Length: 490
Image 1 (cartoon, helix red, strand yellow):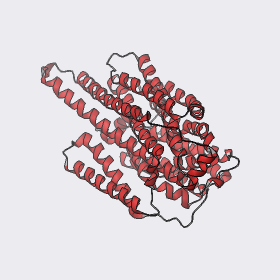
Image 2: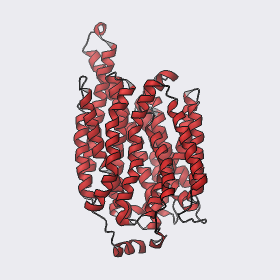
Image 3: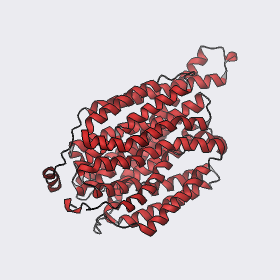
Image 4: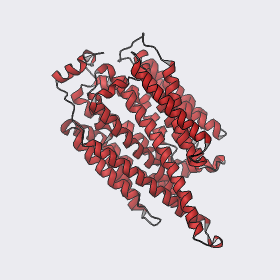
């Protein structure tokens, strides 16, 4: 692939169809966060770390499969790939909507993730080939409407549905949208991306990446209920580390790797990938911890919990295109530093929430945090992708999406584990200082869980500070014609 493959006119109709599919997939990612407590009660699940797999498991499967998206985008036409992915996603949605038990519900979520994993990389690659580098900021800002806004409005929509209807409507609502997207693709979707029929899939790499990422997430998630010294927790973590290391070594030695890690030789892409991964941990964990605080600690209804997050979702939606234009004008450093400063301050404020914090204040803090997040993700990622030759775009987008999905999954699992561990420790501490006969179990759970959530937000605050420090080293990639020719010649 080279510079000549840049399209003369963006295929807006095709991009619109891809937007619908990607929006549904990203919305589905966070749609269950607020509904998890209701699902626990309805299906008789006693452990929060078990039901959490409906959220983190979806992210994990997506993260495990996204590395293969670079191969899929190269080997198959974007029309056939999208139709197949949306068909699989639709089947998973139907399975989850009518699941009679937790096992089948989780299976449906995993099938959804298989189909949804290719949506983001596919749309992003079409956007990259449709717009010149100097205009990508604005274009990717619009893409941010899908990538950031869809997960942000998920909790609000979920809260309203869970409060007034059955949680199964979350899937029943997604089902017709996915069918409509599939029909539109069959009717109007064309092909704009190049195809390499000689590309082959390295199955060993797929197995290694699955065992590596899967082992790490399973180990971190299980530690919340089984403890860090549990035999299977340790085994899965060790297997994860070993196989992931083997995967990385194999990719670096292959002429045609599943995931070309040599993109990390481009410094701005490497820096952007790290910042985006750290920021993903803070963002996704906040979408889990905030509903846990609002519902389980404060006893606020799912509807009010979802409404609490609505202003933040609206802000992210409004800011995404604006952020893209600001990126084209000022570059990534100023915007990302400002966004991470806002994110750090608001995360620190969330870590200091109390049992009597006013509802309105929680809304304001969460909305400010979403404002900060909206200023970071797309400018950083677009700047990094601008440094890559066009032939490496599929690998760059695959790596970015993998890093965000897997880091978000593992980071969320770690923070939930920390929350549960600190809560258990706090409960023991309170019990040791109180007459057992005078203990109010509801108040004990409330106070101990608050301590766990506060500590987890402090950890997220530390992660945000790391991303802030790294953002000072970001430099704007030169997108002049001469610079682009040099990039493409590499």
